[in-house]
Image (tube, rainbow, N blue to C red; front, side, top):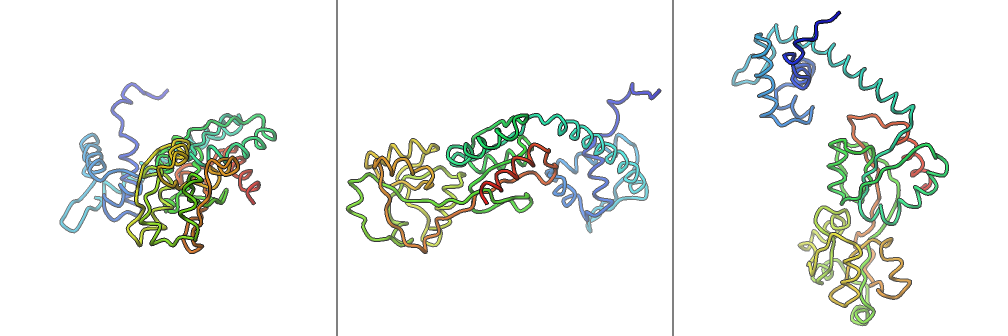
Length: 305
């Protein structure tokens, strides 16, 4: 029987991972830290603690960089077996979770959650009644953070730019529109160019939202949007615009009902103003999609396509 009485003294897994990464490919502690998503000071401290706890010289530090000692390479080989075993543990438990279907955790940006996801989920749950979908609604930057920290299985975002390391699939298309109270429309009859639009006070979403990112990118050459008011809610923006404070910039999906009810009217914009966008599903590159998350992703792609 194994003696587990001193497990509290065993090396920490992240420190072993850093050592293995240095042995395999990284040229410096900084590179190893980046590969594991760690801050370099924390990585350096973790490796120093590992040397202290093992009482073995693992690293040779010099002005030219950091290299493993012969002892360090030997420890790294043993550590790789520990990490492989831990990976097998994770894969096994994930397989058990997949077999049980369980819950797919989705983090979605506001516009996607309000106006696109309900259609997808209605048809998905009718064909996959054994899979529950848990939903958190945040702006796009918060969704990306949730995916990066593995607090959700899938993130649904409206951002123009995608994190370079994230796998992604297109699950929808959308465009932003400028809308205003009907009384405002008479003052804006011809399609407006980007340079002129940048001078118009506008009601906009908060920085970090995909909607704001698209607008800022479209007007970046002319100094960005002239902000008359900034809100974290589509509903608050539409109410403010309907009072005649200023035009609002929102997704066509979010404005559709207001156009039908004539609470707001669309204002013409020149075709070269880049207000169209793709809506993406993203997930962590460090985590394999569960069977339920893969089924939901494929369903959204199929419905969109």
